[in-house]
Image 1: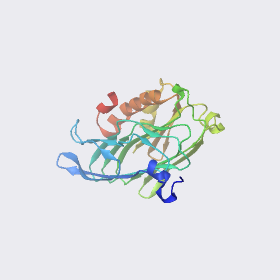
Image 2: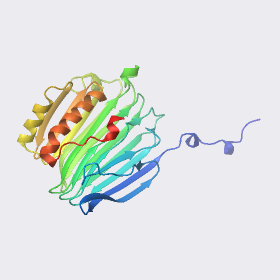
Image 3: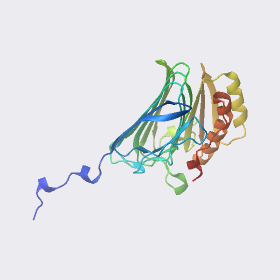
Image 4: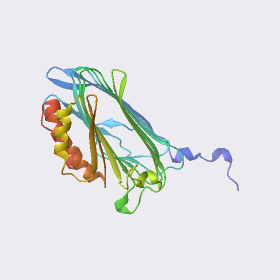
Length: 284
């Protein structure tokens, strides 16, 4: 007996598309920074914010499903008000799984007001073989804002024998100050193409990262170069006006973690006047 067409559930019911949005606002609350606004729709959450070093408000962003599939759309809007200080990370990687044809989209918009400070250190993004994914991070800085931000992207799972041999990962990172672009970065990485193997691309590296610091100067750039000289992988640091840009490519996340820690240890005391306070979630 043939099934009635109107009783057959569409494929979307078996593969629901997540539409998630998280909005956060940090503001000065007496001697410390508080999370004064928190709104979410869908599976994006935060753990309870805390203050392990006094003023800065530490926050962990969570995506409970653990993975992002084709058709999912995740958006994060974060604002740091004048003289507030936010330190934001995540407990685990953002994983873009193999797609049946639809694109998975992650959009992150970060704004920092005059006198505000943002330290943005999410864990890595992993594009599995066959993923079709787009990741966009835009940072808007007002005059007098301070920022340390990091993004790490890993392709495939080479340790398990699953290289990024198919799929497409688009990565965008932009930094603006007072409406003027300081950094516009855009990469389109297709699995199994020379973009991944040629020296003009990733040169066979399985991971790439970008770190930005503002405001910076030549002395800070020189100090960072000296601090990172002993680390593995290939990296280059430069100054664009007063924006320090560090780019790295290497074997994988563990090498990148070492770079992130050493760069943060070198930059934070000079730029922000405090030693690093490593998020405890990084040790689990």
